[in-house]
Length: 367
Ligand SMILES: Nc1ncnc2c1ncn2[C@@H]1O[C@H](COP(=O)(O)OP(=O)(O)OP(=O)(O)O)[C@@H](O)[C@H]1O
Ligand SMILES: [Mg+2]
Image (tube, rainbow, N blue to C red; front, side, top):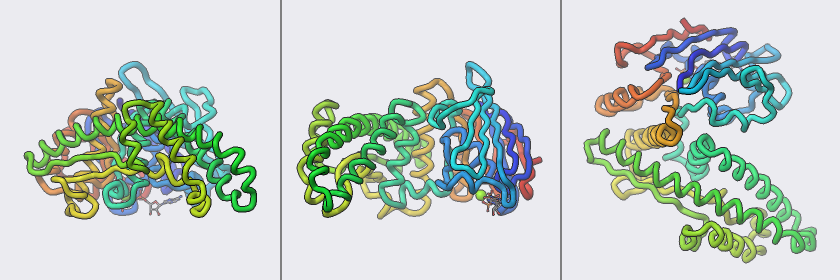
């Protein structure tokens, strides 16, 4: 996969830019607050369909302007494509793929394959379970459109079921007559999503172990395990139907607790992943550098899995990654980056391979 060219108009601090990238390593460098991360965020939009920063799209529009535009030319081993996005003050962006209007953002996910690493991604190790679930959801959705669809259905059903629970105190009758329907639907999607996540995690763990064995010479050994919202679930991983049955049983057995809590208490929105290094919980016991290496390792694993699965090496978008790593780990990453196209930001020009394309960033201009 190659990101060939991005055009941005009135996007964040960028007035207007047209940037072409080389097929190997590209370095965006410049002082703080010049627009390095903004350009990576713009490219990342085409892979995730939303900002990695988790912000509203209206925030993209340059201060004082009415609208913004992004246009990306990219190619995979089969063809060249263009996707355009238009943002205005209304809620929905407009998207065109090769000149044809696209109705839903989810239709472009998986077309431009990129793996993004931003300093915020460190929270996958440091913060609560939501970040780890998000890591899995983003990675699997890029590979399996059916996973994304199931996740969207799950979230919709969960919203309906939660509404029902919230109203149960005043309207117990409606609750009792429809909770079985919503629980059944939710259980079905939950079983599918759980098994997809567990299957994916097996690949991640293998890749992460390889990465750490090369990066640390075997001194640090990571491991991962999936933590379902109720322990019994593990007994049913062998069959989707049985797992759905177990979820259904759980969702039909604790209504008073759910009504008291005002929300659905079991399901994939409560699951977590235990990330460990040398057998110890990474969040509690790892050093900063180890946590950073784990967060980066998870992203490199995502890239390796995507490459094996699709035959396309995804573009790596790395924000400020070098400033966080010691010399040995930098060297490993530089070597690893040679596998495909990389767009990386840094405040200084040094430290990358000689063939890197250097792009200087100054006040929203790229030269
Ligand atoms: N909608 C917007 N309109 C205009 N400027 C914006 C908008 N959103 C963000 N900015 C500005 O863009 C500037 C550049 O941000 P960016 O995050 O790209 O910097 P950076 O080059 O990555 O810096 P650092 O090295 O500190 O990470 C910031 O000063 C920010 O205030
Ligand atoms: Mg930045």
